[in-house]
Amino acid sequence: MAKIFLVGDYSSSAEFFVTVAVFAFLYSMGALATYIFLQNKYRENNKGPMMDFLATAVFAFMWLVSSSAWAKGLSDVKMATDPDNIIKGMSVCHQTGNTCKELRDPVTSGLNTSVVSPGKVAGPVGQLGREAGKLTVWHGEWWRE
Image (cartoon, rainbow, N blue to C red; front, side):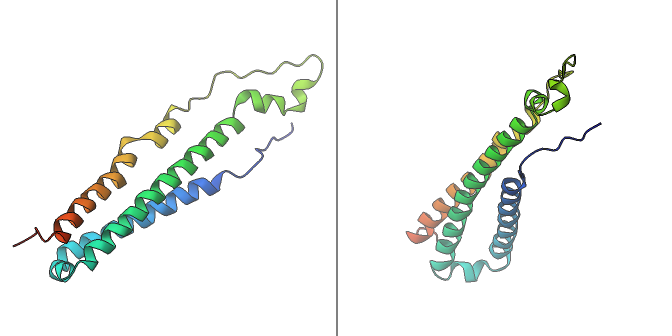
């Protein structure tokens, strides 16, 4: 029995997505620690909120890019593992007297959900909106204690 291997490497988009997610998580933990333990230093000038806003904007953009890369990689994996495409690549299926067909269609709904989950979209965008509001309040010097 011959072994069939998938052609192509689809790991780079997933690795990029996970890398951005890990760095976003680490940044948010660092920002949280700054908000809690270094509140006075954070509020001394407008550089803290401005840098925080810019970093959040960069992460929101990178999250969008990495989600798009993950969606493209997922589409490529689904195409490569499509039973019709696999059957076309099997030489035994082209021999006279042999018929090949899949027993059941693959279920990819869980994979599709991983691309469009609301938490992925709301997380960075919501944080960006929160940071923009905070920057406006602090930049306009409306924040008084």
